[in-house]
Length: 175
Image (cartoon, rainbow, N blue to C red; front, top):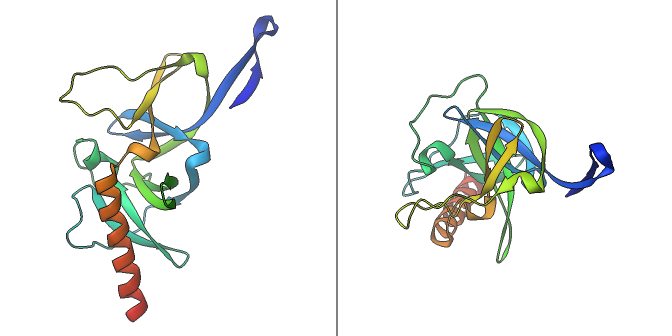
């Protein structure tokens, strides 16, 4: 969080988010969770992964899983475009930090959102899982869906993703 001077000399807390596009909507994740942004690259498919796990990539000698956020959020599929990229996230897990990529349609910018302009996620009833939404940020007329990167996947999903990444790493070491 940062402090920003506003008009009338009132100090306001803000948080920095990387904003990106998915299916025409704007999403954001905390800048501190972002390790880097890389251009779209082919992803190696790994058998028996959940459908929303695109596969794995080799990032400077480290194999990391890549999530298809469109699939995870139930959005329509889209072919990669020149603006498609992978946001590499550092996600804290109970046994340490996990790196994973998230495919996004386009990265928009880094934004400062005043904490008093972030609302709790709306309630849609028990049948709609919104656990991955940290809040809804308002930036002028823009509405940005803020993600809780630690909750994009649940524990069972992370276990499967980590096992697949380990298996892919071991297979790569054998060849």
